[in-house]
Length: 176
Image (cartoon, rainbow, N blue to C red; front, side, top):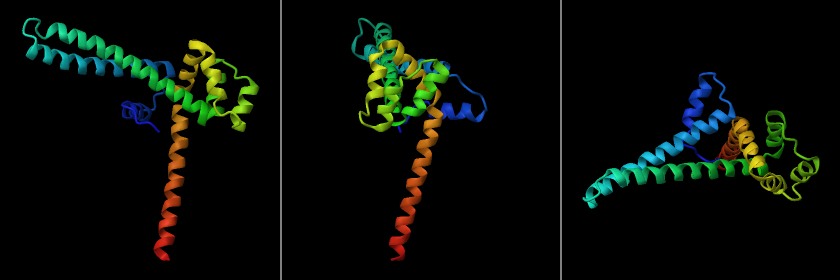
């Protein structure tokens, strides 16, 4: 499970009982990611400009750094959510396909689901998503955002099961 800058914010919103739609979550996280990157690089470039470029001053380097940081933040966020959607397609194909069908109206072909569930070609759902172009990829990213809480719960349960197995092994070794 990847750690995200937004896990704390998302869990805080979930505690309030509010349900955040996948599109709003995507937009909010993208804006936050790009704004933090823009501010960080802008301040670094601006400070560098103030110290080393006395003729230009800090403003132009700040603007260049902010522009670079904002672009970097958006591209970085896009790659991270794309990676998440393709991971879900590989590890949780049924959940992602259900979210695609029910929430996005995109029907996954039965042959793709059969090969994904049989693990004959584990990347078949991934290939289907990527081969559909930007539209199918975008819908898959939104579907992954929709089912993210469910997948995180499954991963927490798996981690708990592993912890219990570990405790049982260490307890039996200690008793031996």
